Length: 73
Image (cartoon, rainbow, N blue to C red; front, side):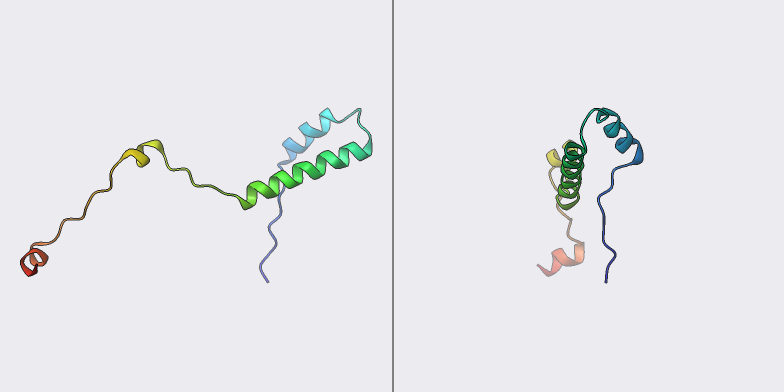
């Protein structure tokens, strides 16, 4: 069975978020924690590959045929 991947924020990020939550009740803090967890899971599941701009503009080069392949054609 593969290991379960968990969504975890770095400790510094958690401390920063908690520093803003000093004056909030426990229910609101739990709601914020749940929302952050869901966002982290969403990002984990939806990884996108965005090619560099130069790669997207560059046309693909055609491979040259070898002289042996040209003579057979």
